[in-house]
Length: 497
Image (cartoon, rainbow, N blue to C red):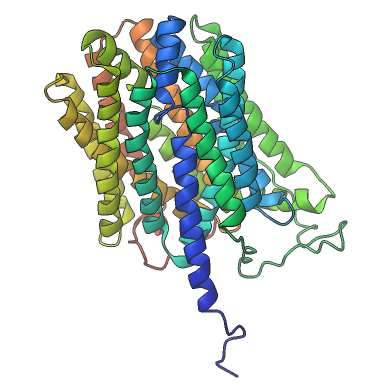
C-alpha cells in the first residue's frame, strides 16, 4: 500500500481554506453585528426615537425590539435554507450576499418611514430577516472551520473579538447619531451591509463542503432516489411532544394574562416554527433537496447533546434582563447624556475584546466544564455591581460586567460549536443562536414588565437577574462529558448523537 496521499494539494488546500474561512467569518460577524438595531449603533437612535417622539415607556420599547428582532429566533429556518437549499451550488456565499442586499435595502428604507410606527416596525422586521440570513451563513462557516481545523474555541474567540469591536464602535457612534436626523443612522446601516455584499462577492471564494465519513453526496441525476431514501423517517419521542405541549400551554397562559399578549404571541410563533420543523422531518417527500433537509433535521432532532446545550443557552439568557430598564435609569434618574450612555456601552465592548483574547489563551488549558462554571458564576456575581450603580463608578461597573459577560458568552458558544452534528453546521448553530436570541428578547421584556406592571424596583430586578443566572449552574452536570471534559485541541471521544 502506498503512503502517498491521493491529493497532492491536501496540505496546501486546508491552509488556503482556513484563511478564507477566518477572514469571511470576521467580516461577516462584524457586519451582521454592527448593522443590528439592538446593542450597536442603531440601538440608541431608535430607542430615543421611540422614547422621545412616540413617548414609549420601558415595556413598549422592549416589545418593539422583541418583534423587530424576532427573526433572530427563527434562525433554524434560515439554517435549513443555507444547509439544504444551495443557490447555484452555494450554501454560504450566496446567502451572505442575499442577506446583505435585503438588510442594506431595509436600512435605506427606514430613513423614509419614521413618521409611521407600523411601517417602521415592518421594515425593521425585514431588515432583521436579511441580517439573519447573512448571520446564519456566517455561523455555518464558523462551525465548519471550527470542526475541520479543531479551532472551536479560537474561532469563537476571533468572532467575539470582532463582535466586541462592533460593540465598542457602535454605541459610540450611536450616542452621537441619537442627536442627529435618523437619515444618518439609516445611511450608516446601508453602507455596512453593502460592504458585506461587496466582499462576499469579490473577496471570498467558496469551496464545496467535505462530506462526513461514510457519507455520499446525493445523486442529482436520479431525483427520485437518493442515498438514505429507504431510511425510516423521524418519529418524535414522547419527550418531544411533552415539550411542545408545555410551550403551547405557556403561550396560552401568557395570552390570558393581562399585559402578556405579546409574550404569548411570540411563544405561539416559536411553537409554530418548531411544529413546522417536525412536519418537515416526518413527511415523506420525493424532492432530493428536501430529503437532504430531512436527513439533517433528523440528525439534529436526535442529538441529545445539541438539545442539552440549547436548553443551557435558554436558561442562561432568559433571566429577567436589565437592558432597557438600565437605559431608562441612566437617562431619567441619573441624567446621563446620550453620549455618556454610548461611551459606557463601548467600555463593555472594549473589555469584551480583551477578555475574548484571554479566552483564546485559557481554552486550551482548562476543560470546557470548568470554563462554563467559572464564567457563569462570575457573571452572576458581577451583576450585583449594579446595586450601587452611580455616575462615579459607572465606567468600572461596565468594564467588569462587559468582561465577565464575554467569558460566559464564549464558553457557551464553544459548547454550541462542539454540540453541532457534522453536516448540519448552519442548521445546528442557527438552532443554538435562535434559542439565545429568543432568550435575550424575552429577558428584556420580562425585566421591563416586572418594573412597569409588578412595580419591582431596579434593585430587586438586579437581585433576581443575579440569582436566576447562578441557578443555571445546577444544570451543568447534565451536559455530556464527552463535550465538556476536554480542552481545546483535544480529540473528542467517539460518541453517538
